[in-house]
Amino acid sequence: MLANSASDTEEQWRVYAQARLSRDSRFDGRFFVAVKSTGIFCRPICPAKLPLEKNVEYFEHATQALHHGYRPCLRCRPDSAPSSFAWQGVTTTVKRGISLLSHIPSQPVSHVAERLGISERYLNKLLQSGLGLSAKQYQSLHRVLFAKQLLQQTEMTVDDVALSAGYGSSRQLQRAVQQYCKTTPSALRKSVKGNAPTVTLRLAYLPPYNWPQVRDFLKMRAIEGVEAVSDNSYQRYIRVKGEVGRIKATHNAHANGFDIELRLPSLDGLHSIIEKIKGVLDLHADPQLIKASLHGAGLPLALIDEGIRLPGTWDVFESGCRAIVGQQVSVKAAIGQASLLAKQLHSPIGTVTCPGFAFPSPQQVASSDVSFLRMPNARKQALISFASLFAQQPSGTTPEDDAIMAIKGVGQWTLDYIKMRGEKDPDVYLAGDLIVKKMAAKYPVSAEKAAPWRSYLTLQLWELSKR
Image 1 (cartoon, rainbow, N blue to C red):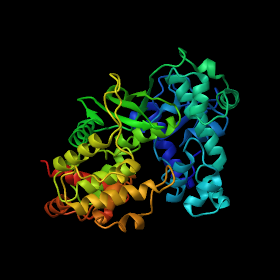
Image 2: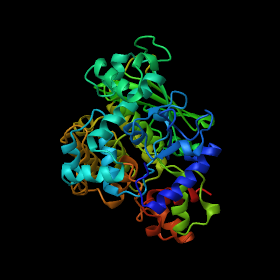
Image 3: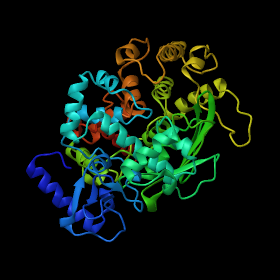
Image 4: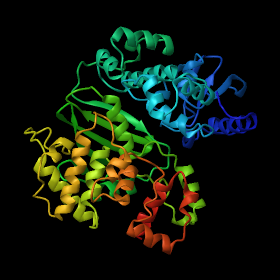
C-alpha cells in the first residue's frame, strides 16, 4: 500500500478516490485500485462498474497489489499501464534500485546492490520500506507482469514469452501465472498463430503528450537509413545479436500511447528493446511534475509546452557519436555527418522488407579511419577514441564519466549531452550550450529550482528559441 506518513497517505487516498470515481486518465499508472470483494486490482481508468469506496484499497505499483494477493484485471490490464515513478516519498537510491531490478533477464540482487554502492541487506531494507517488497520479490512480480503483457498483447508462442520474460521454461511461466494471476498462460491468450514474424503491443504514457514536439525533434535529428519519422510514427533499424531488426512506434492519441511493431531476428533481449523504445519516446515522464518544476524555475506557464518530452537516443554510444560530430556545428550539419558515418560503416541487409541498417557498433567505428567524414582531424580522432573506449567495455555497460572526459576533444558539453539523451538523465542542464545561454538570458531562470528535471529546462529553452 502507500508507503508514506499517515497524513500523506490520507491525503493521497482522498485524491486517488476522486481520480478513481472520475476515471481520470491523468492518474493512469500512478496508482492501482484493488477490490477486496473480488480479489482483483485495476487501473483507475478501468471501465468496469465502480465498487464502493469501503471495498477498495490503493497501491502505487502493480507488484505491490500482486504481492498482497490480488490478481490483475483481464479487462483493463494493469500490466499495460504507463510506467510512473509514483512513489515520490522514497529515496533516489530506491528509484534507481527499482530500475535495475526491472531488467530482464534479472540481475542477481547482489550485483544490483553492488552497482548502487550499498549492501544487499540494506537494499532489501530500502525496498521493504519504500514498497513493502524484498528485491527478489519485486523481480519476480515484475517479470510475471511483463509475461502477462506479452501473452495478452502479442501472438508470441508461450515458449517464446517464457524466454523473453526470463523464465527457464514454459512450465516455470505457467507456475508463476497460476500463482499470481490465478489463471493459465493459455487462458490469457486472445489468439495463438505460432511464430508470427512481427510482435505488436501497446505502450502507454501519462497524458498530455506533446507528439508534434517529439516528432519534429526526432525528424530534425533522424539519421538517414537508420531512422524515419512520419506524421504519426517513428521507426528505426536496430542490431539484435549481430542481425538487423526494425521497430516502429505509431502514436495513438486516443489510447494515450504508442502502438509498437517489432520485426526482430531474435526475441532475446525483448524486454530491453521495449525499455529502449520507452526511453527514445520518453514514456516514463510525468508531465505535471515537469511543468511544475519548469514554472518553479522561473518560466511563465504560457511559455511552457504542454506535455513536453525529452526524446532519447537508442543507446549511450550513439548519443556520444552524435555529440562528437555535432561539436561547434549546426544540427543539420551534425546529422549529415552522423548519416554519413552510418552509411559508410553499415553492414548491408539486402532485403526488400528491411531496406535500412543499424547504427554502426563501437567495434566498426573504432576499426575505421573515418577519413570520409568532413570535419577536423582532431574531432575524427576523438570519435575513434570514444568508440575504442566503448569497444573495450563489457557488453551492456557504459564507461565511467572520467574515462569519457579523459578523451582529448571531449568536454563537459559532450558528456552532458550523452547523459541527457543517451542515459536519459532527467536532471542535466546544458549551461554551456550557446542556445541555452541565449534563451536563459532572454527568459531569466534559476536552473537549480528546476531540479530534478533540468534536462527538460534545457529542452524547453531550445524549443523557445524556435519561436
